[in-house]
Image 1 (cartoon, rainbow, N blue to C red):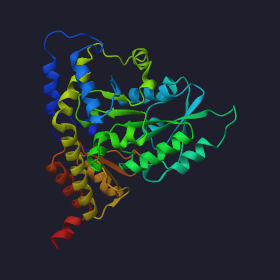
Image 2 (image 1 turned 45 degrees about the horizontal axis):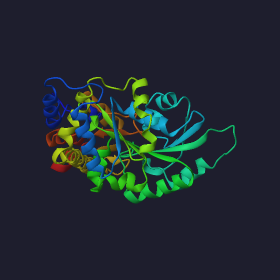
Image 3 (image 1 turned 60 degrees about the vertical axis):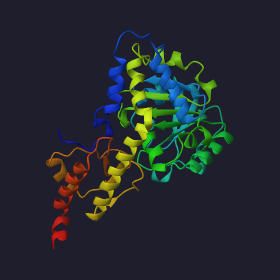
Image 4 (image 1 turned 180 degrees about the vertical axis):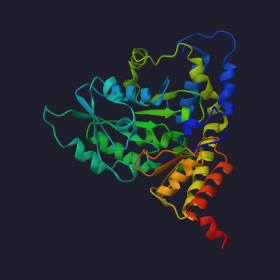
Length: 348
């Protein structure tokens, strides 16, 4: 079956997660998270982050982000985010719904990243009773345009947030790719840098389903289990949501797969540049954003390639996954060279 670049969600379950899932499918185990698999994974995540954090598992990223943000806010509060943030553009109002009305306020930033200056401007714009009081801040790592926040950038933003009375949430749908690309300890771009709660994406890194919500400030998670239950996110057979994480977190499998996806994006990015295609953003993780001529875009679609053009700041987005083959990258590049005439130039 042909591989595609529309989303890393297109990829199947990685073999390590499959093995862990099948191993959990033996005999009986307590329901609703009171099982050994869920405890083991939670402890393993505490080891990964080098701190005694609270860990919860939900079915998808929208629920993870929305329920996490709801813990930071009352209904009359607001959360500052980038205009391209997934919570703003692609979650159907779920953050506002689950917080009973807390408003998202957008702050500008180049290359998908928020800046302390933009955050400060939004947070201090008004302080009267007619405006939702800023209380939360959400960062996307990696960003919606494939760029990264370095540890010092996260720390500077978190310091700004603290000064303004904001709690910090990180949408880590592609957190694994960020850690692999930056080659840092997970703690260095989360709690050590000032992040209060992380939504650690599992699906995009090779799990069948499920995200982990990791509270570094454990006081914030006091009633989170009740939020999950009320929102329909408490899995009765929780072991099947949590067990695949064991396969990913053993021997740094999650980082191995993330590094591969990142490397495939670099391969694709270099090939696009060589074919004369303009990149819209630097390729820093597993996403490549490019401005395709209309004829090239149409030609690729006619050849059966799938990719998105409505994501982020426009252009074409190509996502590489844990299973993207070098041959797949080379195949789409060959088609692009043919459509642009670059292959003829190379032969001459």
